[in-house]
Length: 106
Image (tube, rainbow, N blue to C red):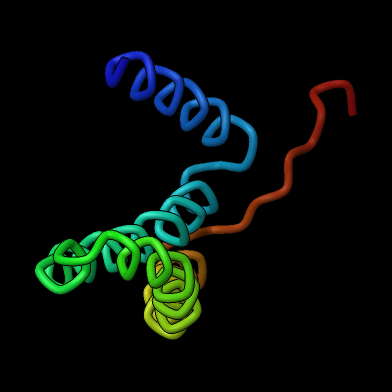
């Protein structure tokens, strides 16, 4: 079942890269992966307290996930801004020459 999930995610990622391009797909993946990793790390660290009483764990899972997701926005935006700055450095480079194409019929 895990392989099927990873296969579907891989196909969706390839389609998304084809649809919007490498940079935008990377930024979207970062928007999803960074909060997910932070939520998983928090649940691992706080799991000792949460798993002593399952009711406390169930009641606190959703609010803490929302809090961590909202709290990770500055980190995600700084990573995405760094990607945009790196891309704009290459687009404004002096080594790039703008040319116009003229059809052979003229």
